[in-house]
Length: 347
View (cartoon, rainbow, N blue to C red):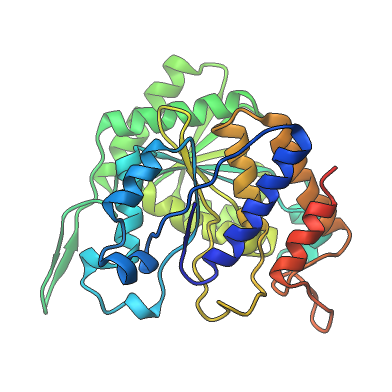
C-alpha cells in the first residue's frame, strides 16, 4: 500500500476497506503492508522512492497506489520530485503495460459533457506503453533551450502490441493503434512493428491505425468505434485523461500496470488533488475499481473482481454520488460515505 500524497491516503483507505470486505465475503485473507512514497517519502526520507519502499513493492503480490505530488514539492530538483519516484517504480517493477478501462455508467451519463446517445455501449480498453518514450528519454535544460528524447525499440513495441492483441481476443477482436506516423520516426517504427505483430500472431484480430490527433477527435465524436486502443506513453497519458470526459469524472477511472508476471501496480488515474485534500470529499470509486483490477490480474480472483465492480455500479445507480458526480444543488456523499455505500452494495 502506497497511499502517497493529497487525497491518496483518503481514497486508498476506502480501497483497502473494499478489499477487506471482499476477503471476508469470499473466505480469503489479504495481508497489507504500507510504505511511504512520493512527496510523503521525500518528507520522511529525503527521496520519493526509498530503498525500503522499493524492496517491499518487489516482495508484494501487488501494489496499490493512491496518488502523488503537489505544490509543496514543485520547486524541488527534477530528479527529486514525486513524479520521478513513480517513473522509477514503474521501471524497477518492469510494469510496461498500463491498462485503463473506460466504460461510462448510464447512471452518471449526465455528468459527462457528451450527449447520452454518444455514451451508450461505450466500452474501451486503453493499453498504454508505460516505460519508454519521451518520459524516460534523455533530457537537457538550459536558460535558452531544452530537449526531451523520445525513443522506442522494436522489442518494447512488440511486447505492448502482444498485450493489446491478447486482450482484444477476449473482447471484440479489434485493435486501434494510435501514433503520429506522418511526423515522428518513433511512430513510423511503432506502426511497422504493430502491423507485423498483429498480422503474424493475431490474424483473428482486426488491426487499424489512427493518428493521435484524429484519435483525440474520434474519442468524443464516435467513442463506440474503439475496442482496444494501444499507444505509446505520452499519447496514452493524454488520451486517457480526455476519456475521463466520457465517464464524467477522473474519479471513476482505474488503471492496472502489468509486466511479464502476475505482480502489478494499481492506481486511479487521477492526481493527488491537493485543493480538496483533507476535506473528505474525494471520489474513492477509481481507487476501489483499481482494487478490482488487482483482484483480477494479480490474484486471479475474477468473480471477486466482478463483485466489486458491480457494487460500484449499484451505488451509482442508487444515486450515491460524490461531489464530482452529483448534480448542482444536490447533496453529495463524503469519501467515507461513498465507500460505505459501495460496501453495502457488495452482494
